[in-house]
Amino acid sequence: MVDREKVLEIIEGYRGQDGILIQLLLDLQAEFNWIPREAISIVSEQLRVPKSQIYRIASFYKAMSLCPVGRHSIQVCMGTACQVRGAQKVLDLTGSRLMIKPGETTRDMSFSLRRVNCLGCCAMGPVIVVDKDYHGNVTAEGVDRIIERYD
Image (cartoon, rainbow, N blue to C red):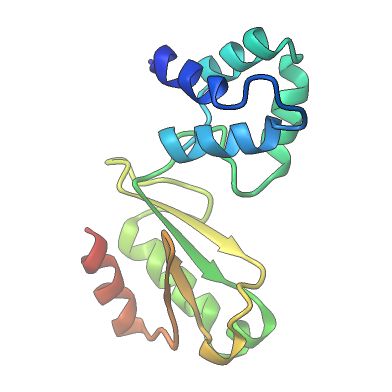
């Protein structure tokens, strides 16, 4: 169940401003770690914006999730430079250690795993980003250390 008062508080911070829907949704994402269906209903009702428009925006941006995600987001870079340095092995090993596939969340809601195209730090490949922490030159042993650090 979503905290209606918190959603209303976030909306109130944008009251009277134009073009705020994307930023408002990002704020909801930051607050709840995803955008709950109930929050979308409240935004739709308060801003008089069709739910379909809100869903269209929220499903377009990778920074927004319409499904519950783990406390920690793990992204494995699959860009060309990371690929040639073993990113697929790192991704497979990370998924194996967490017992999930890319796009899934662990049962205890601790971790979500995503594959991303390029994180822009090619010289450090393969790269894993946990939340906002970048880990470069990741090896098989490094995967375990990284997961343990956030567990």
